Image 1 (cartoon, rainbow, N blue to C red):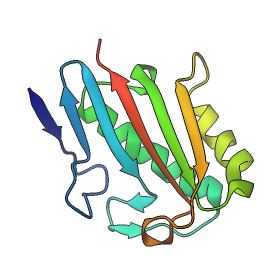
Image 2 (tube, rainbow, N blue to C red):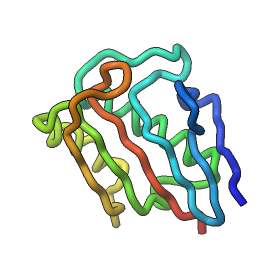
Image 3 (cartoon, rainbow, N blue to C red):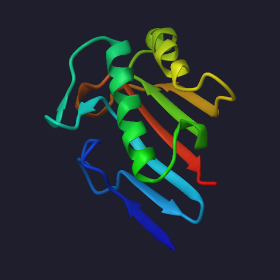
Image 4 (tube, rainbow, N blue to C red):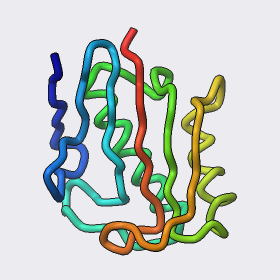
Length: 126
């Protein structure tokens, strides 16, 4: 049985997908780009500020699903430029100070709306 998770505290889907889906005790969070949920616009700024917004969006969805970053077991980070990896990692690491999840990171040609970063996550609800 699957349940769709939606919160106004994270950007609304900009296509045919859900913010997140709960299946059993697993939460699958769609890739988040640095959109401010209040304005619906991509935030301007460097990779650090964009990563911070992405993490806030993930946090809002996790919260709506009854979870925190401690529940995250896997993430995938997509970067428009691999040169931004170190700076992205500095912000990302603040959200996972202990026992970080498994992760993959890739440089991709383009991201939606010209974003510098997109992150998806999988969490386990205990």
